[in-house]
Length: 343
Image (cartoon, rainbow, N blue to C red; front, side, top):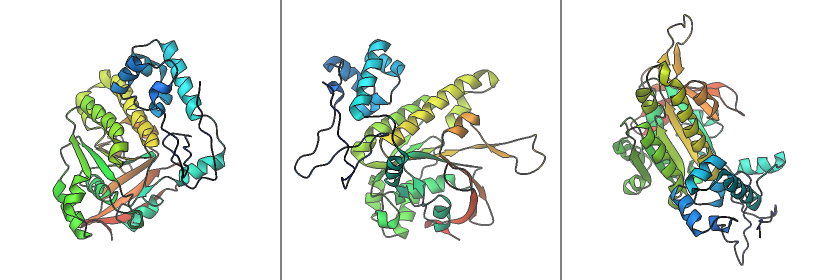
């Protein structure tokens, strides 16, 4: 028997943990969460294998591909397709009108960058449910902004935060808890609490990076994480895949990694902030020869893409390059001991 949750637009609180999932909340009794073993064809043995592979919720099953689910559960693709179809029917995933989508978009949170000019450029800050990419040369402020976001996400909503924790995946060894101490002391936050609310991991190769990001998506709900930082997303891919002969394999692996990040951001209502390295175009005779690495595969996935560059002194310039709903523009901010601030 298939169970389908009823939608009620009159509810005061609606939690969108998946694309179109709505959970009805009742004052007397809440509806129980669906388990993957509630799906037809998923017994204890298959459910255990799926959970060990990361498919712990019906939401994760619903957005999986038949090939992924078949490999994870050691089942045939036909069976996997039926399980995915049942999960989507259970969650009522399908078409919806634009007004319902607008309501869901309004529930997306935003994390302040610390500078009002930069927040205004980004429409209020770094947005949850999507990926925001910052690319630029060294000392342009990408990592400093990552530290500031890891602090600000812990602040209450009235102060530009989400009252949540941050997960930080460091691929270049540039994370410094001392910077969090400086930033926390500047705004009078409890330093010990701030440090405990940033969950850190050092990635040593691209496979390790992908594994850590998958683990981050699994732990996000239980740790109340609303920010995932990947600094930087291309460092290991660029070092491990050299030459044109490995380009296709690199881009396929990168594409899958980015889509997993996007899927996790939507399921967990999470803001994914990635930094990216740059290269110099030798054929550019006019204008700025700086270009982000990763090619079109990386360019297509992030919803918001920004270019950071250094200006005079501690000033930095952020240019909004791509966004589905925001106009192009620039913002100037400063990097001080206290953190990211307006000029």
